[in-house]
Length: 194
Image (cartoon, rainbow, N blue to C red; front, side):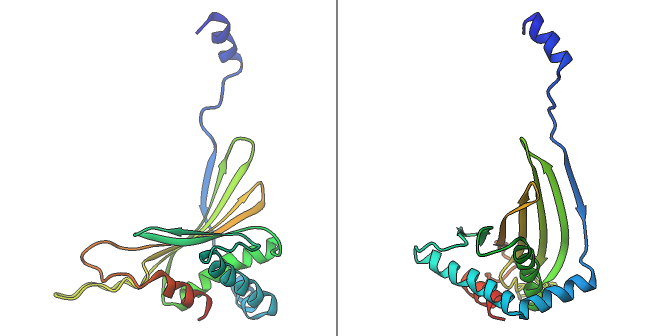
């Protein structure tokens, strides 16, 4: 490092650490009721049906708006919905919480609801996350634990307060104490057709 670089570095130090903030948050009873009502509304049913249809189209190699991405591996499966027309920011927010309400209807337990804000290059990334676990009971001798579909994470990511995508990810327990997870295709059917 030269003398000039040393002086410039002292005068204009680069920030090495990006700012990150994480918090737990809750939905009010009114917000929960509004999501339930939205799911039963024409707009809600149409939005959920659009994601469901586009997921099946994507698996067949056909893309439609909004764009979906399918995630598949032996231990994690899921999908991500890109924010684009015909969805609005309000619809996108309701999709996020609707998937969460559907998980509760499947008998899952919500473990957390949190929000993480991260400073990126020239923007701020906000990730809202719902995390669910199956209702696990202690294994009895000779019996394995039913993990249902596995653990489920639902995320809504925004950049500079603009929605980016909603992701639903299912991860399975590979431990010998658990029964094999039910198929991901069955999870999709139960999530969209309760």
